[in-house]
Length: 478
Image (cartoon, helix red, strand yellow):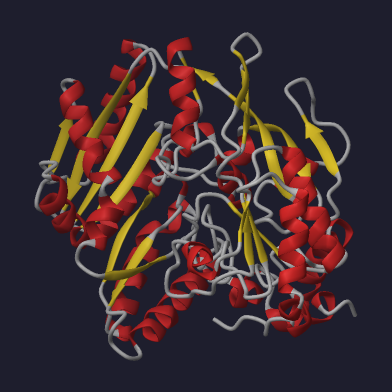
């Protein structure tokens, strides 16, 4: 993945820039020792690394604004960073950039269960939001697999989803308002719990913008009452395509579970070895969860059973108690860690229409043979958000490039069948050069014009999302 050459003029003024940042911010808020900045040289796409010029760790919106003003004055690129869990290189710095991280923005500012919202600083982790709400009998719906570590800032940047997004939607469906710092340090407030859909949909623009338009420091989030009950079931099949057909059949029947998750045999073997979740030995497993009153759960479970049994499942297991529910979900929540124990993998994030799941799974298997690399499929099947894990050996010359070529073919496939390049991981640098597969040059030009409005100098994450050649004139001020 190519990145622009660092600006020699900025590197030459490094000491001056660090001094200005240090003067503008409290003690301990600026990291500039090269040994310490190395901790921020990459995100979860670890194949690419570059220590930044400096790292800023603010505790307030005003401190973020102060740092942005300094960087704007020097013309220094800024890379916004949450917890660094991005799998698309969204927080990869360049040598001439300053990272502004939200990790110390951890305040819970307001909880209003009557009006169903919570207002937080965006450095709080996803899981901690629901933990704050649990005593009140409420929860926050988006639940990415990395929810223990990932922050609300990153969730907003990438429009993250999770297992339960089938019923409740992704971040954009649960984000009511935001406080954001623009590139010149201006602080703006957008939306809010009392705001209806009026005027330009700026919240829809900001959510999923990958740090291209500003840094969100506070967020107002929609919260929901905890359901009366929930029940997961596990369905095993001897064919990946048939498992995909089961998902499509459930959705076609008008049944909307809270979650439908998919794991194939490659993933199942490693998950079982790692988590001992008690999964069956088969080609594919679906985890389907329904919720509501006892009568609603019973009705939905019966309808799903009827659909699945027409497809001859290897096993249809309904949880009988809390321990069995935890076991069913334990393996799915452990999947990425389990796969990481056996070697390196590239995690993709293409999305396809649910009706195209059977064909897409078959074609991914064929591409695996063509590229000579194994793939494990584990994903949010209910909304077609696929996460193929391409297995490779990072220490073997050429293997990373083969994995990337395989991944590019998978993402092209997603677009060809009517889907898109990303569901929740974002574009970052990983899919940057594939944007032309999904968008015409005119479409990309309009998107870049929007960035021009918010960030005329292209100082915010300037080498991400848009193909470098397409954005060259914007980045150079032409």
